[in-house]
View 1 (tube, rainbow, N blue to C red):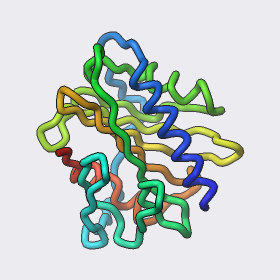
View 2: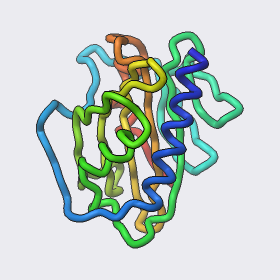
View 3: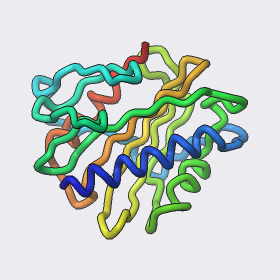
View 4: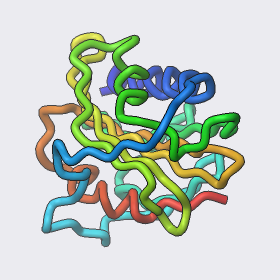
Length: 185
């Protein structure tokens, strides 16, 4: 499971570097898959509020621990959430397209599929992008949920990850509740 956590850290670093450099055009919203969500039996009682060093506050499963890398993770399953922040630069968040998300991951990983993409939504009053991607990283099939929230100056990046063969668990059951709880400083 430590290997999955390390892979997600690598994925997040690639994403941060790409977001800082990417040049994008108009807005895209596809309905190819339902938006990321939670099972009907979500139990918010199992969530605790944390704040990352980047100033991102959200609720995560209570059994997760903070690792030295700044990632919160379930060390038994490998489920985790990682954080980053990059300046907005010349491209506002609203200019990101599904193709940009695909290109970011496809340049380094195999079998990349964008399962859902929503741009222009609001999370706690802030413009956001939410996309779910499956990919193969060093033989591990992962599902990543990328959330970007902007304050107009910076894009705050939150990446949730879990093994693609996982069908239940505290992250999957509480993913939407965690996303909905995101606030930035």
